[in-house]
Image (cartoon, rainbow, N blue to C red; front, side, top):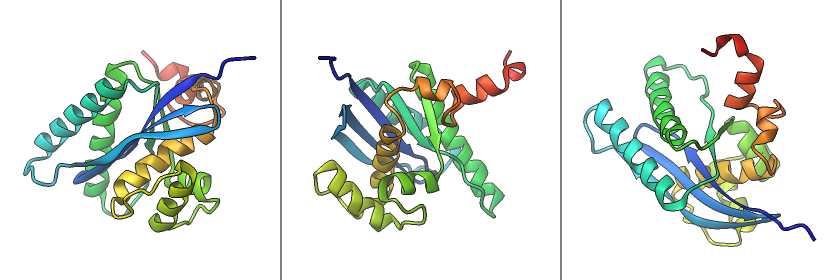
Length: 187
């Protein structure tokens, strides 16, 4: 019989005040939560210090769990340009941390995550958390929505394929697909 490969997935829900993360271990169809939580950088007064702390905490999580892949929530377009810029910086710092350790990254839209976890792309955070309780066979802290969202992102990634190579072939969007679709933009 073929051996079922284990994989550790780090899911990240970026934020500029609270950043959720979730680490799951997958083996075949089974999923186990290794850790989840929230990185609180709201006490830091400068954007630079917030980004530094986010980077340090993500590197610490990466070094502790040695994830095989990272799944991150893709940017969404809002009305407030300044908020979007700050969120983009936070996402970039998280991605830089993963890339510095050669961890492949895949992005998923919030709607895709909700659809994958609950079957409803417009599900509420409460609905996502409740479904994750069932899927992960454990009672999650329902008040930690940033963390449960991050676990949802990791679970979504698991559901979308067992290999990051699918991204490289363009079957799901991510940096690998971008590189394949835009070779002239790579230097």
